[in-house]
Structure formats: structure tokens, C-alpha cells
Image (cartoon, rainbow, N blue to C red; front, side, top):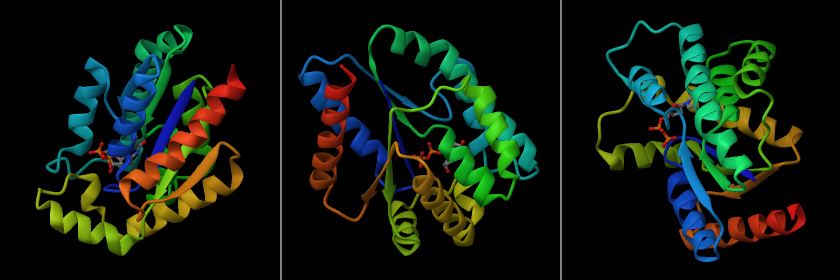
Length: 206
Ligand code: TYD
């Protein structure tokens, strides 16, 4: 089973992925956690290029190709073998990130994005996708509280994030695999909601 987590930067996805993984592992599920971009040797090199703040000249098309290249590598090297082995694959971002960030955020035509996504993934669609939704003003707060240097993507500005969030909400409307989770809730409450949905999905898949 392939479960993906989507949301804006600082939405708390990684914490939820970890909590879910720990709980499923305790119940003897074989779980693997992946993150995008990255997760393979080639993918991690691509990740560095994508997030490097000094790469100010990167074109929108290059950005799209690089995210897609990292994804293609991950699917081929890790995701497909894991799914064939019956594992539960938890992915911190997947192709909806490309639709939301490069499509809605940067403004690349959505049919180009869709073709690219399909090609990079070989048509592998998640069974379930959680969108952790937080308002833009909360992201602003979290970014300034983090006090780390913004990476290249995080330097795109709050209007960019607003478009990305609208993009996610649009995708969620069209995809029945989507579950929107209010990201302002306490961490444990979010986890409980996510866990229940996953348990239900795992039992119907059997
Ligand atoms: P990362 O540090 O992994 O952020 P997060 O913890 O929020 O996932 O950085 C990934 C960045 O790349 C993030 O800003 C989202 C962006 N991104 C895209 O723009 N398109 C994509 O297809 C993917 C996978 C990520």
C-alpha cells in the first residue's frame, strides 16, 4: 500500500509520517518511510541542487525536470520493489507536490505537469493521501520560529504558498484518495485521525 503525505512546508508532515510508521511497525506491518526529493543516491544529489539557495538561475522547467527525475529514480529503485514485497510505503511528498508547487505555484501548464507526473511514476497512484492543511500566516510564524536559513523553495514568498495551498485544495476536490487534515490540531489528535483512516484502508485492501 502506498500512502502519501502532502502539505506546505512546516505543516508537520514528517512528524505524522514517523508516528504512523512507529504504530504500524508495532503491529507487525513492514513499513518504509521515504521523502521527496531524495531517497536514492541520485535523488539526494538532485535534492541538493533543488534546495541550494545559490542556484538562483534555475528555470521553472529545470525545476520540474529535477523533481521528476528524483521521483522516477525513487519509484524504480525503492517504491516498486517495496510494494511488490507487500510493504506499507509512507511517502513524505509525491507527485501532488509537483502539481501544487510547480503547477499552481509556479504556473506551469497543468497538462504538462500531468504528463510529466504520469511519465515519472509509470502511473503509480497512491492508495491514500493526507493533506495537512495550515493557514499561510501559521507558516510565516513557523518559518521565523525555525530560525534556519530558508532553502531555495522556501524563499519563494507567501503569495507563492497561497497559490500552492489553493492548488492542494483543488486537487483534493478531484481525488477521492484525499483526506484533508486540519494541521492546527494537536499532534496526537492528527495522528489518531490519520491512523483510523489507514487502518480502515488496510482492512479493505486485504
Ligand atoms: P523539504 O526540506 O523536504 O521540505 P518539506 O519538509 O516541507 O517536505 O523540501 C522540499 C521542498 O521542495 C518543499 O519546499 C516542497 C518542494 N517540492 C516541490 O516544489 N515540488 C515537488 O515535486 C516536491 C517533491 C517538493
